[in-house]
Image 1 (tube, helix red, strand yellow):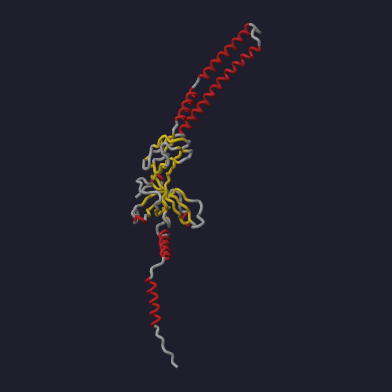
Image 2: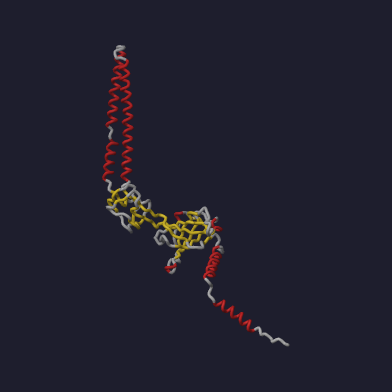
Length: 319
């Protein structure tokens, strides 16, 4: 009995249908992520020798950010600045009621300037020395005219007055130290800006409010220089050194990449000495100049490190 011939066409049509269906399906999220990582890895290790591109955006943070607090408990007499005000470095921004402290300083200054005890001690020593010399002269003219015991007592008076001069000088020195102590205590009633020009971003206390030692009164920040914090693959970490040139390109997806075409320059300031045990990456910090205040703390940026160039901290710029 002859077997019926089976046509290969249905099988061929089935394979073609499967292929067309597979090609029509969109790639999965995992496939897209893998492709992006592959593309970025290829770009990182591509033809740009000396360039290390971080695989994830770096985070922009503030470097100069200070919360000012009082050194002394008391009641605020005045707060001179408000949110949004520019504050020059080392400017007095707030003051506590300091009447008692000022009076204590004035008293200490008067005591420190007093030289009456020194002058009296010198005069007493001069008189004691004259008495002793006259007694000795009398004994030279008439031996035994002044008993030896009296001579010893006169010598003791002269020595006591001499030591009194030293003691008066030491007392004056201690009075000067107490004056300095009172002056330092008075400074504790003033709240001054930090060592950089900044802007007030928050005021915690106002005039008339009581504060304890260490209570926050005002927060001042400066965006003149910022820090970009990122993670670099351990295979690239050994290439990166402090001072290497850094390029930053802002990553602002919610703004449609408004700043994507603007590049900021900085320099590496820190490379961590340990590797993160979870992602096997190393922390890297870069300091970025922000003269026109375009960067803000909390933004993200793609970081590229040029390990072939080293720059000075004063030469960082923006493009």
